[in-house]
Length: 79
Image (cartoon, rainbow, N blue to C red; front, side):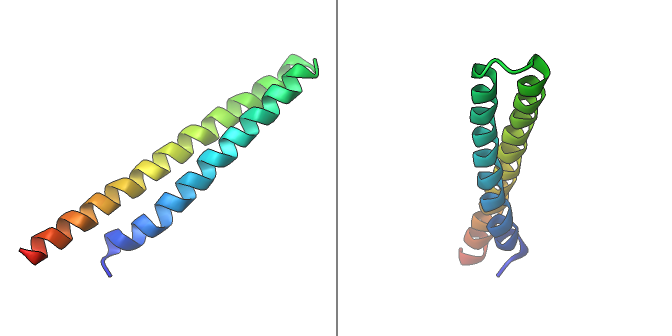
């Protein structure tokens, strides 16, 4: 098994989990905002959720990159 395949196995699921976590946090921030709590409570939590969503997308994209490297390397060896 190549190192690119192993990296893909780690990066992709972690990226998906972070993205899902970020969207869940964003939903929580919307509920906090709807309950008319203070501005800073929902604003900072919502901003952090957007950071988590973007981090998850970046980690997932890194996993996709390693999968493409793995597939390319596999095709180079095959023919």
